[in-house]
Length: 391
Image (cartoon, rainbow, N blue to C red; front, side, top):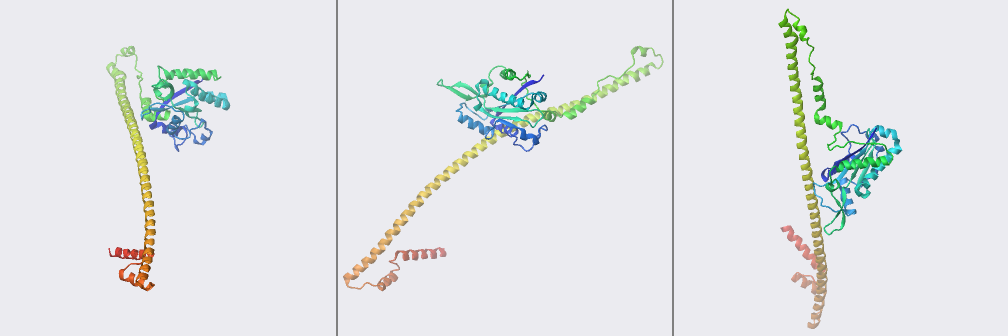
């Protein structure tokens, strides 16, 4: 009989994007050789995310008014792998397979009052050997704030709170799908990390180890019965040496050599596991540091943009002020020039001297000024350019 399979994986912000790239088939290449990208068009969503999982978390947290203190080390997404075996899906057919995953989706939405609004993505993969669904959700629980008001908050530790909480979910899941008409036995619980066959082979250097183990011989060689040995009177010591002692010595030497090989292989595997653990820790640290640097760069970029905008506004106001003042001065100087000419005409009338253009030109030439404002400005501008050339 087939089993109902439910596996859980928790993601922090630093590794949620990796899950997104795999589940939503955003990568170009995959280490999992079971994936047939030519069949990826058969994959479908029960809920499709608008963007990366960490961005969807931020959006849904705001939209659903979710509370909770979120740190870099906080789990923000839980991912469930929901499936059975290939024989089960082959036996129920395409329509019932779709209904099975729809019921899986409904189970998660109602379990612990999660709600469909807190599910980030639910995608069914049909491009691998066995159909399965990756359902990613925000671990939301009912709680109370300091004032005793009911709130919804993000807290993975509270969602999985209690002894055997994961096993309880498996029990509830198996009962739910059976109530919906799918006859499946409950899968076995395991807290161990599930590795794919290819990942396990790479981690343990599987091929070399298997060859070594196959080459090790633990069977004892055939030796004559001790009674037969005693019955031989002639060349007795020589026969014992040849038929018993020498084969036993060869066997011990062979076992020792095989043991040395096995020890070397196991040492390599131990070293590989230690290096993998070290790289995992370093990778996690680098991810955290990279996120911090990205945040700092974003803050600096925002602050710089804000300051530049403020400076532009300030200088634009000052420029407009100077333009206004310049226009006012030009108008005042023009009026002053006209007033001087009227005053000159007035003086000429009093002293009885006729006022002519020749008189104005002689005055302008003698004193180096122009009554015409525009001509005076051009003259000053020409003089300034001449001084600039000298400099």
